[in-house]
Structure formats: C-alpha cells, structure tokens
Image (cartoon, rainbow, N blue to C red):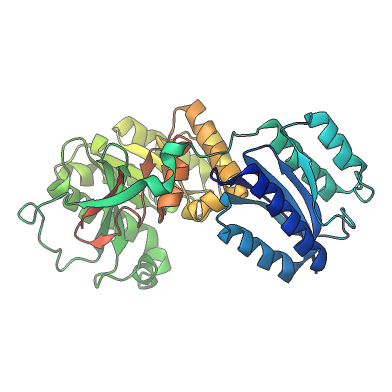
Length: 403
C-alpha cells in the first residue's frame, strides 16, 4: 500500500558537514534498494523530507530515523495513502536550501515529472514544503527548553498535620490533582475529580446513578468538593470542579444552589472555578448561556474543560469566553513528535492570547511534552508528569528543575 510520509527534524549540531553528505548518500542507496522515493530539503540546521513507498517499509524507515542520533526533534508532519508516486526514480533528491533561493527550489519541485499540480494531495505537499522554506527555524525549540537540560524534583505541598481526614459515609469521594505553574513552583488551583464511594472512576460512579437523576446528583456532589476545598486551600489557590452542561441548562436555580453550597462550605465564589466539560452536547443553549452569565455575576471563575475533544469546540468559544481553556490531553500526548498537534495547539494558544484567556495543558506526562509547551508560551499544566490524582489526598508534586 503506497504511503507518503513527511517529517522535519533538526540536525545534531555535533554532526560535521561531510557527515551530513555521507548521511544523504547512504540514505539514497538504501532508499533505492527499498523502492523508497522522495525529496530532502536541508538549510544547514533543519531537514524536511518527503518519503514515499510501501507502508511497512516507510514506517520501519521512519522508526530508524527517529532513533538516529544524527537527528534531533523529529516531528511528523503528514502520513497519508497515495494514488501514485510523485518522485519516480528519485531515491532522494537533495535541495540545499542554504545556498539557493526559495523560488528556485519550489520551481524545481514543481517541475519534477510526476508532480501533478492538479491533485489536491500534491498541493498539500507543495504547501508544506513552501511553509518549511518560509519559516525556517520558527519551529525549533529554544535551547533552554531542551529536555536533556532539565530534571524533576519532588516537593511536599502539605504536611500530614495540615491534611484532612479521609471522607467517610459520603455518596462520592474526590481525587485531587494540582494545576501548576511549572517555572515558578506555584500551584494555581486544585481540581477535585469525582470518584465513587469506594474510590473508583467517574464512569463507575455515574453508572450507579439513574439517568433521570444524573444532573441533580452531579450538582449535589459539588457541596462535598467545596467542603474539602475549605480544608485544604492555601492563600491565592483555587478549587476547580467539573460540571455537566446539562446541570446548568436543565435544573432551574442551579447557579443559586452552587453559590449557596460555596457559602455553606466557608468559601468565596472567587475561590472556585467551574469547569464546563465539552464532552456533552448542550441541548438548551439559551438556558445554558444565561446560567454562565449568572455564574459570572456571582463571581466564580469559568473554564472550558477538554477543549478540542467534544461537541462544541470553537462554536462555544465564539459565544462564551471563559477565564481558562484546558486543552484536552488527546492533543497534548506526544505533541513534541506531531506537527499536526503542534499546529493546532499553537493556534489555540495564539487565539487565547488575543482573547485574554489563560491556557492550561492537560495530560502532560513527559519532560519533552512540557518543554515544547512551555517553549510556545503555555505556563499552566496538569498531568502525571507533575502529580497523579490522589483520593482525598495530595502527594508530592514533581517540579522541573534546570540541571
């Protein structure tokens, strides 16, 4: 099955110019032997390569490239199936972008005999090559955020004498996970994640709730989260709680109930962030947005949770601008390796900057993910890399520290 794969990478700075030419020559011989064709652009610091061949061969080759120490920051830009080869008999056509004009390189790519400008996928490949040549160096992670220059250091946030007893005889439990400002070592807020009475997942929790009671149950459980917040919030820290959109759109007086719960727990509305999840469709939009206005008037913070994974997406953002957007972990996982995810998250971050909205990256699990996100100006994070959710407790928080 014919596959086209495009990636970009940084050349290892320790690699000499002669070694780069040898690398290209070796690759040309291997590609010819494996019926792999394509082009390679090199500007002295970055590679941009189009590879085409049988799917299994291309995947194996790309795995070797990612493991090759002569490459740094290998980022997949596109992988798709193809109707035909564009670069027939071209095991690897090298274009030296450091000594030629952009126009001459693009013209030569256009004029390759099997490059059909009328085929839409060809246009996409051509645009990716054009973007690489126009934005050389733009996507490189600054040296200060090279993952090899950082390590993690665990620090205790609470002492045992400060921490509350376990919650007993309640209809639910909560696992707490911090949202951190990594470079300053500060906890921005704590998210109270609902669990079953025995500590099982939210899915198991809600399985036991009758469908006609789901929204009322979700609203009622917030009182227990606020009570926990009263016992553990430090100065300037906030508590985030998830709320199904249907609670706000289908229960009359839901906002009044939330405000009363917050007051009964001894907290102020400004200490609370209501996270509205994107993973449920909003049925009565007018009622939903009226409830959001009421929450604003009451003084609570608002966030869109799991942004990028649900029903509403940009339509929700166009009508309602929250204090925070939490980018879903599906977009964060392996972001340092994926050009598609990088383009999407960069666009979200840029949009939010123009709108004055704070961005939180959810599901951060590796040093490489954190470094890439921090390098583009995202400063708030949540995920296993820093701390796992712990039932009615908080463990040590792991912080990145320069080596």
